[in-house]
Image (tube, rainbow, N blue to C red):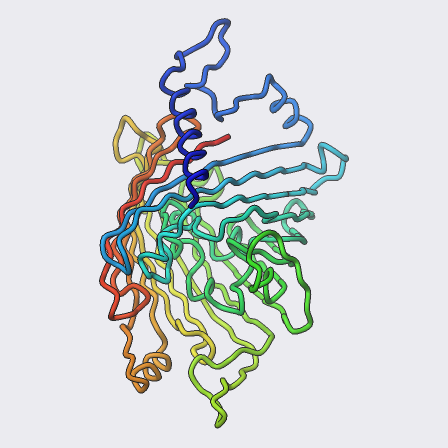
Length: 427
């Protein structure tokens, strides 16, 4: 991170928090002050509301965080941030075309890379990536038959709908998003953060409780040799990625007496050829394998609800994922976590969470490394405790404490204790 970049960020933070601390509780004539408004920039003189009434919605989020580690490869403190800007157009309101939605999503990422100093594979921050600005998503969706059928096409983040665990979104560690045995697959990962690809998704939801969905995407998102900016390259050698998921939902209807729950099974496969993770031919070249695949399943359930507010209470989740060990180094992932919303009566929206994520080397990989005289640990295990607190309607603060056992599954790298602090500003 350059000196000028650091200075700019410090000035931004100083300006934001100076406004917060000096703003009066309410301005004259009942105009909502900085303290009460839902977003930092407000309603833009009613322009924002008028645009939404015409089917045009804009959202912006600035996420900044700092991480400091003890142990790992080297001790370091870094700052990184993410700017997410989205535009949604409602086709019915704008064009009289029912069921159509256009979505555009831009991202800007800057700053340090905490896991580069820790050495972990699962990545302690889910916004860590290359410094770049990019068009992240741009797709159009058509819903039919009273929203029972949905068709989507364009630049698409697979994890926005597949392998998505609502309860786990509290955590900062990347493994509580899409499972790492899936996110680390393929030549450049699947179509998820930080690089997406063109694809087509169909979703069938015959009832509010059940859905089936399948997506077909370019097998190599972006350009592995040029990760910056938006790269859309369709090559015959890329192959395709096919992902399928089905789920049973509980408590999704407003009138449902049951607490929220989701139980899902999913699978994925690439059609192109890959190098074997271990085996080589007589010339020492990796053996080529036709395609690769994986399976995952997860469950999340609210197990305790506060009587005065059903949105408060205790929820838990558990996830299991496996990947083809012929091609993928990591063959197994297990994750579990609990989240309590509204633990403190005076703070009903705050969330406290604890999670553990374990990423396991495949048996073939461990055996090959042992034969080569470079034995590895069976798994990298990361635990996280975090608390998300709303300071203002548009400002949240979230400390995170993580412990990494066997970073990168390399026995030579010491375990690491990681302290992080994130804040989010709704723009």
